[in-house]
Image 1: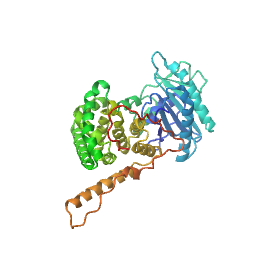
Image 2: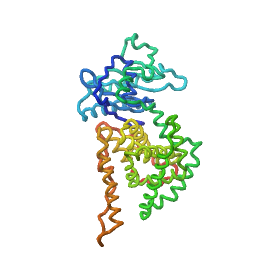
Image 3: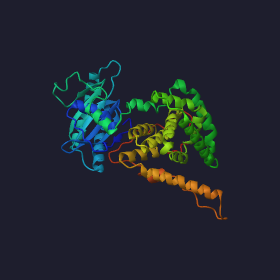
Image 4: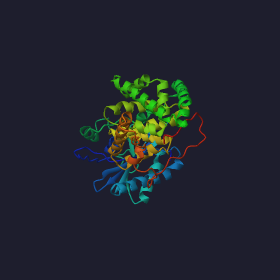
Amino acid sequence: MNQHREPHEPTGSADGQQITLRSPAELADALPYLLGFHPTDSIVMVALHGERGRFGGRLRLGIPRAPQEWAPVAEQLAECLIEGSERRGSRPDGIVAFLCQDPQDGETGRRVMERLRPLAQRLRTACGSLDVPVYEVLCISEGRFWSYCCPDVRCCPPEGTGLALPGTSVMAAAAAYAGVRVRGSLREMEARLAPWPAAEAEDQARALDDAGAALVPRILAGAGRKQVAEETLKLAESLMERLAQAPVPATGRTDQDAEDDRLIGHDEAAAVIVGLQDRETRDRAAEWMEGPEAAPALRLWRTLARRCVGPYGEYATAPLTLAAWVSWSTGDEPAARVALALALRIDPRYVFAQLLHQACNEGLDPEALRRCLRSERQERARHGQRAARPKSGRPGPRPARPGSVRKALPAAGPRPGATTAPERARGRTGRRGTRSGR
């Protein structure tokens, strides 16, 4: 399996509004509202419950490039969705699936549909072998959709059917009423977190070289680790303040990202990126998760993820996971899942990302982790006050030990039906520093 699964929980409006989808066209139009974004190059599967086919758990995975991977991937996805639904309450009564992929060079949407037909059949067979029927599989490509299950050419013609104009479907109206928004395409969301292209990355790579040479020996020496942590967090706070005070461009997210990149120097970004590779420093940075700190923190983590260029791509795991945590903490679960998928694609064994991913999948409330992080912060502040004004010759109590992330989230480990992205080769090229951030 070449990408990390992204299971999704069912969502709905606060007043329990119900929408009835009566055709493949309405089902295709509903897809971005089910996920919170337009999936690209994706398999999406949605569980259905009850006689009326209520939407339940859902998952997304990038379409494997090699057709020989399709059979095992289909089996793993079917098992994951069905067993996950059972753990959350009930076994699905049916499943609908979507294959979303843009045409490659020289292809048409119809050709994409035909090329992916064996994958659609693998999904139907895999679910059927677990006694859960697949009611519909749709291919969405080039602004049109095709049904692999409906033989009626009157509603599903061979040339495909055009998708409804954005904002005109019944699902769009219901989503607008309920306050549900679509955040663009998956490709656009990933682009906000992707490293700079090589042509723009040379100066940043040199700054990362210099920061690694200066900071890594101090971290590894032990005695300087705490000082580096304080320097990293102080610099990160100043960068957050700089971002918070800067006017937000009214022209869109792309311009905001470009302005954030401009506001942070190469050396500043490099110093924070290297410092965040230490787990304890990263856990303290995770405390900027709510209130007025959350928005500038999220902008900073996105900016730093884009700065992990060249041989330092692996360093992006820490800022990506922090971006995912802030997004989840502030209620933007789709953005959190995209960031977590990228983090786990880089390092499938990164524990903080694994724990957050599992917590999202199990529908946990982020407040449990927020409470733990608040407690750590308050205890550290109290200890600092006692240390500054000792009342006796006795030493004050020790500060709270790090590790709040592990205490507040489920234990890392494989879940039933889960699969792990293949372990990357250990003979990576490039300059590496400390990797204590797991």
